[in-house]
Figure 1 (cartoon, rainbow, N blue to C red):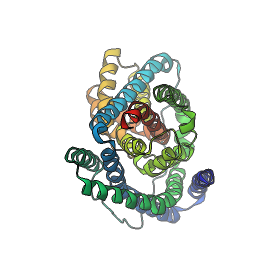
Figure 2: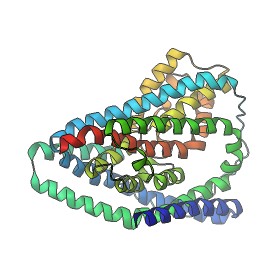
Figure 3: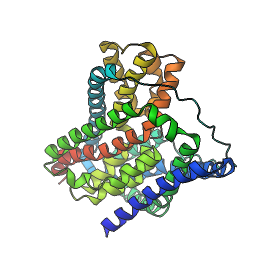
Figure 4: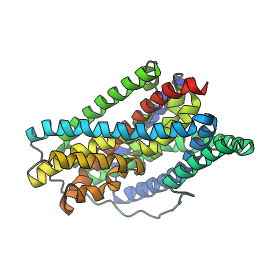
Amino acid sequence: MQKEKKDNLIIKLVFGVIAGLVIGLYSNEAVIGIVQTIKFVLGQIISFTVPLIILGFIAPAITKMKSNASKMLGVMLLLAYLSSLGAAIFSMISGYAIIPMLNIVTSVDGLRALPEMIFKLNIPPVLSVMSALVLALFLGLAIVWTNSKKLEAALDEFNNVILAIVYRIIIPILPAFIATTFAALAYEGSITKQLPIFLKVVLIVLVGHFIWLVILYSIGGAVSKQNPISLLKFYGPAYLTAVGTMSSAATLPVALSCAKKSKVLDDDIANFAIPLGATVHLCGSVLTEVFFVMTVSQVLYGTLPAMGTMVLFIVLLGIFAIGAPGVPGGTVMASLGIISSVLGFDDTGIALMLTIFALQDSFGTACNVVGDGALALILNGIFKNKKK
């Protein structure tokens, strides 16, 4: 039964991508204006529920960890930082070895402007993502410290309510959201004009993503003493959703559903690690950003950044990634300050960086999402026996 649901979701996601491309390539301005409106509204609905999902899953999961809660939070944050830092170092070494040998064309002119939306329906979240995360952490830890049974039971009920919202509202609208996203990209011309320009770089980064995921899941399997494939095989729908939405936060419902299908993960640890990882673990985006800033530096300024400068950049980038929002382009937007101050990029460099990053943002996000499962597997190995 689970396999049938998984296959159905994959089919719907793939159909959403194909339908979006067809609509974008063959529609006129009026139709794309409607598509833009639908995309905006669906995105607002998803964004509204993300803080509720974080609060509804992380806080109850902490209360179930009991005395291990504080330790698990610290370990998860450390693992997220080390994963991002390791991915950045791997990317930096690869960049110094590969980029000088590439001949990269940077012209991205000729894109069509997207038409205005018919209307905007703003649905602001009750909390920001970071506010929801901090509230969930504080609330869960405080309930553990005070042993408040009534609040613990209330959080369990809230978890069930949020689960119903995820399965009855969010997951059903995701294929439509993905279709509208790809329709906008196809109409604008990003698919046909930008992709060929940076194809070499994007392909290199994609290979880097898969190498890093192999490393992460190998470590996760070794620490947990479980076969990592038993978890990884369920992540297909989450990967496709991340590719379509370009957002770890928007992919959270599907990622959590995929992780909980595996029997190698304890449910409480999955409920804790996957939502938290969607906010603090951005290894794929970090790996991508490091390689791309080196590429842009070579293209615009004729040289790669100095080794010392890059080391400082990636140490800071790992910290910024923990606080970056899990939304499209969140990592690069959060780190624009250090791109300009540490690497010395001017407005042209920043603009090109945003363009090339946006081109592959979906794949970096997919790497982030799948990587969360590896961190959950490591936590499972460290804490499951203690929890028992």
